[in-house]
Image (tube, rainbow, N blue to C red; front, side, top):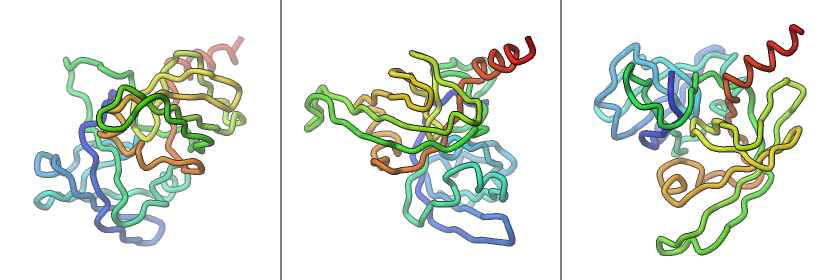
Length: 202
């Protein structure tokens, strides 16, 4: 389990296709602390560490993961949000995140709000769309996980929602690389998914 609070941004340094699998190698400040078999969230996708060498670690994504996430479109040099799994007893600073991406979404607009230059007091307003046919839902002021980052959704509609990004989050995650047309990983609130499923049984 994860919280959606990104620990560090890693960089893709190697991609190797083997059959239907993709081996991804990342460079990051936390790599040396990782252990083989450890679960780490990569852009919101829970993957198992299979190799650690210095400041690099490697994971393998299977075909099913590549079809449902944006990992298959990563290029050398791209930045990826990283979070280690939550320890029992730690604070849940974000929300309950499983690391199981439900579907991808597309950024439809990015708006600068206020002054964001030179440590300004402004923010960024991102709006995303997704396919409602997959029966996922977003509620007003509810939690949503975008590329592994726990955020609060607003202006929620059938297939659209917005999030506001403060300067700290902008600088310490890969949201700064997201522009209009970018594809992001979405994990919807697990509590909302259970409630929706229970309503189907009635």
